[in-house]
Image (cartoon, rainbow, N blue to C red; front, side):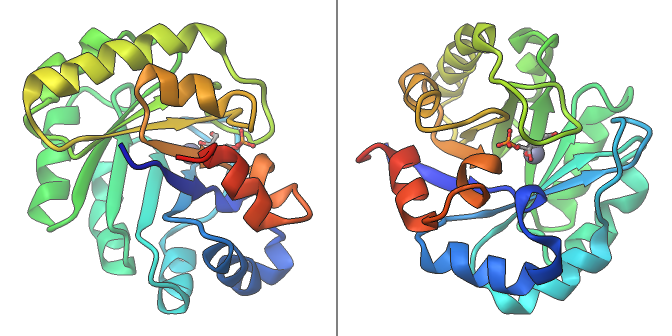
Length: 217
Ligand code: DX5
Ligand code: ZN
């Protein structure tokens, strides 16, 4: 299984975003992870579709947009138009996650579903036919630089089994506290996309940091 590394722009130097984007791409990043926070679903505010649109022409990497907003549906089209390739919505962000995933598909984008640490794997049982990606949060969403919550590992394994049983091509992404020490645990549990903010942008050498997360895979 190939591993994809998705640096989270949240940890980049905001005064030099274009340069940071080019630097991680040159350093071997596979996707760009964009954390969208609304100060309502999560206790922090980040950036919106205008930033995604401004960065889009600078990179060929898939843009992996993680929506931490409630409601999400009114903004899906704006993120699709801005150049998102994958749009992920939290299962906790409203009563109609199924409809949100359908809407993302209808916009011609890959649809992702995200689970907070307290949310069980079973919450997505009836969504497996609609998703292209499942994102397991290994911190409480809202901030970079938090510690990895170890008890999410069995959940990652359970979702890997659900993906195998579905027979569908679904990416399994992990986000939060992913470092060179926690990355192997995620990969062992069955993840194939690793988000990393601090572990990449906090390093002096981005290429070495990305290679360390990949762990030779
Ligand atoms: C948290 C975000 C993460 C965050 C990861 O709400 O979803 O993507 O940027 O940052 P690190 O890798 O520093 O935990
Ligand atoms: Zn994220």
